[in-house]
Image 1: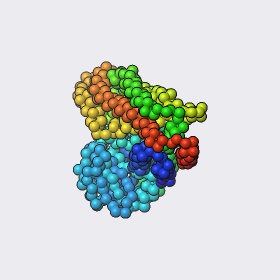
Image 2 (image 1 turned 45 degrees about the vertical axis):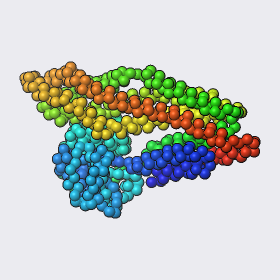
Image 3 (image 1 turned 120 degrees about the vertical axis):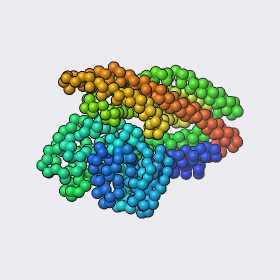
Image 4 (image 1 turned 45 degrees about the horizontal axis):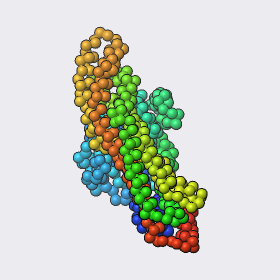
Length: 565
């Protein structure tokens, strides 16, 4: 992958400049450690994952088997045993079972793929010696055979939350014999849209219908899809047995996935920020060497005082932020509004399914999931922006503490300190925090909290729906549905909100604490880096103009080299 290689090479090149030119060993070690973390993330996150999703028996697994030319992926399995299968190229074929990101078991024969003892949310890595998979992997693409849309709430929760972080394009399959999109598929499409991801729909098993009828069904489904999504979405036709359909429409979509561009967009900003922070260290050295401060001990004492003030400011900002309860109220109000807006749809599902708990539960979660995630992101963004002001204030304070001998030096001081502890750092921490939040929401602990909160509520809801429906015989379907809707609005939604509140507050508290700790650590780290730079200048005791000029020129050349990377 050229994009990833270029990004990694930029990080390595910047690190080499540091090792060759920077005079403070402790700072060099810190920069190398930061580089290792960034390189590790880039190396690990080296695939765009494309989930293949469909209702139970939609034919997606059979189509993938036809695509790779092997009856490898399990078909016609029970929904409750469904897990995600990720396809990777390897000369030595094997299977790896992961649970919550941890390798649990390895099998050395692909024929053992059904022998794993799996749980909802598990992922099986399938390493196969296959040219098509090799070609896709070389472009940074991994195909994922996902659990069905109707595979059970816990498996579906995990699948959704996991692949909205790692996916970019969802491929949705629906059986041509259905002649339309199921309500569960439409709900799934609505949900995926709210994550800002691309969606393409494919009619499977097209060989089961005459070609003229297939085209009529395609036109009908295309009309529905266009009413739900943008004009960029594709509606294709596939068959695992009929060559004239085959998987060419799927290949056409895959050929347009530009993983290079996605990776560049994902990491270029972080690499730029890393190099900028490295440049800031060099400029800090220049700034201190040319400083007119004669009492560096006093300067270090002032910096310690500024650190104490900044941490005190951080505590104040945290206390001034919206209360935990208020933030939880905002999230829960978003969920309440979404459920009220979808109450008619929920009523229709409850009525048409005659109290089927799974159908109602699935519809309920498809509404709650995206609102919960997007609202959490908003609330955490707002919180981090509030407490992040303490970093910006520290930057301004530090520029007044360390004076320089020239006007140019004053400007340099501002620029350097902004890079070390200002807006760029806050933005970087914000992005890191949001990434951690999504990872947490995809973890089993969060899933257990959310599903656990909803389960008793849904049990209550499902228990009274059949009774409610039986009480209103003799009325029109519209009247029955309306009464179910009223019951949902007056009783069910309130119970859902009450059930979610403790876990929403707990997750907010945990993520707020992590954000607070990150900002506090950066305040301490910023002061520590300046201390180390000051001590290095004190130890060297550059006294002559010639020595100062030589050192400044060397550092300035390194800065110019870094700016070219």
